[in-house]
Length: 167
Image 1 (cartoon, rainbow, N blue to C red):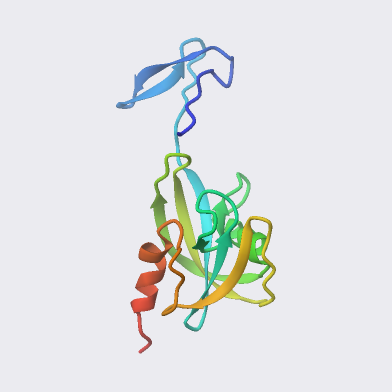
Image 2 (cartoon, helix red, strand yellow):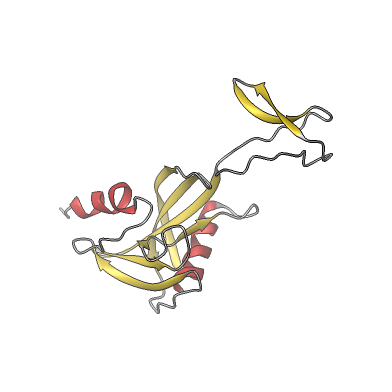
């Protein structure tokens, strides 16, 4: 469930639902603080080498045991491109060059919905070293993707690439 603050983060007073900008939001009657339930920001790397894509097998929830693009939440002080580079480095040990934004996707979740910036990347190193959040990292041909794909990575990102043919 999405966290809904029951106490004001400024003064500690209990919050109560109140209609604000057309929605019921929890707000503080004492100081006026409003708990805005906004999505998180996340970044992913679509790392391509010819018709192969790099995927990681997640070792943590959600989607433990499934394959996904290396991705994670953006830190408060980093641009989305840097978040993608950091997550790729942390999850599979690679350095990449960002080629550009591939897609901006809405990822609904009952726990933490996110806006996901997917960056098309080219690897500058190739020595895979899976990090603590992943069981494995491997290259897959776009025509031989694993069945267990997490977060709708298949239909939203990978399948359309698979269907594109050079020329």
